Length: 143
Image (cartoon, rainbow, N blue to C red):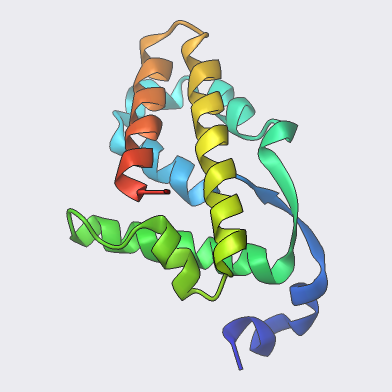
């Protein structure tokens, strides 16, 4: 049995509201920047990343596997310059290739849109956050 089934089998079939760009990624980008600058502008970043267009309705089992696939990827990324791609991490968690492709495509599009929206605010801290988010896309190797 999977951890999900042992803890809450009803979650697997529930529809959940899912961040397209997972909160762990936003926190990872946030932590790479000078926190004194960024914390004073956190409301704009929170609003940009939590906008309704950056959510999906997702089956609980997919959301769970995506969450842990991204967590695994970020953990590996801290220890290696070039670990597995995010796509590989999601597939290893048991997400079908077609679903993984859709997740990665939406993730990339949403990340670019979030970065563009923050840069339009015209402050250095938002530019820094946006640049770091976009640079992570290359590191994640979504294609």
